[in-house]
Image (cartoon, rainbow, N blue to C red):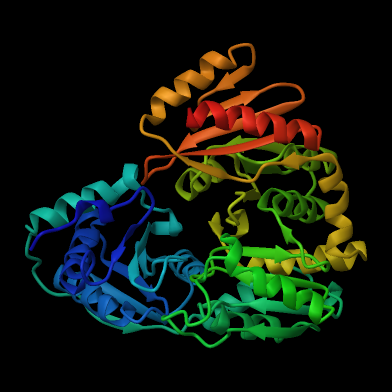
Amino acid sequence: MEIKESIFKAYDIRGVFPEEINEDIAYRIGRSFVSFLKAKNIAVGRDMRVSSPALAKSFIKGVVDQGCNVTDFGMVGTDMLYVGVAMYGYEGGVIITASHNPKEYNGMKLVRERAIPLSGETGIQDIKKMVVENNFAEPEKKGNLYNRDIWADYVKHTLGFVDSSKIKPFKIVMDAGNGMSGKMIPPVFEKLPVTIIPMYFDVDGTFPNHEANPLIEENRVEIMKRVVEENADLGIAFDGDVDRCFFIDDQGEFVSGDFVTALLAEAILRKHHGESILYDLRASWAVRDKVLENGGKPFMNRVGHAFFKERMRKEKAIFGGEVTGHYYFRDNYNADSGIIPALLMLELLSTKEAKLSQLIKPLKEKYFISGEINSKVRDTQGKIKELAERYNDAQISYLDGISVDYDDWHFNVRPSNTEPLLRLNLEAKTKEMMEQKKNEVLAIIKH
């Protein structure tokens, strides 16, 4: 059997089913995962994709055949798998999911004990080698399969992040995009005084309405319109496996991930003064400023969940946010969650007695951000070198790609892990300057 090695990514395993990832490969991954971790007890969960039950079954068989016990959590969100692995003390866990990818994809996110992620640098390449070689030591005896319902513990854990009695009656449009949040939202939010206007809560791995990726503009057009039509207080959209969430304000405007990070940092620092907060190097100055303003310690970090979770542990940071909608919490085992940010935002709006648009307005008036702009480039490293030469009078760092900082504007350009792309994020003190500098940097990248 030919294995397409490109399915082994920087942070997970992902490919088209059944051409690139199928039952045979899932079986081998099961055996490889256990062999790599030398584990005796792991957990597994799966999302709602059509191919997920078959892949989960084969993965479980591989784990059992390799002499390891496996506990099946059933159909759960990614952040539920993380919580289950850490809370119950499993040696590792895997969720069968392709997150926000289109319906023909599937894959796996892998963690070790305490929900610490495996990445390309910490295990995925080793697993790839074993899968390709397909040569496993035979165990003395097979493992056992158990089932466990983690829903009640998950709901209790998640609601522990807020004081439910402080949350006011909100009217919220929620778009589950036929993903796992359609199943996860009701048991959490039924305990709160909120009215939910549901969009696409039917769990359906064929995604009949739109892809479960709110980061793409066309997938959020409908919820933005609906918030205005329903005169709702806000909108919240989730990706397919619910490790990310996205906010629409009461005016029907999409709220960028940097501004959400800034507000969530404020929400947390109001309750936990003086703590460390991580933010990603693409983010607006708004995050750093908001953290300092609220008595916190800001730390800039390179992009990617494995890097965030490692640094969260190192700095003992209470919260970390990426502009792409990943939000990490120390008390959530340093893992990302799509549900916890939604709860914290409701608590912040309640305690400040403000609309989301009112909290965003001063940020929009002060910080002018380009958003992420992707450009196809043949020689990504050559372009990064060119940018360093062009802006050699700035403060330059290479934490992830190149970051160029001036007093009144800054940008980061980083290569994609998977494609010949450069990703630009830029910010300036005025809108005019932001547009001018954005065009200037893009001209260099595209030349």
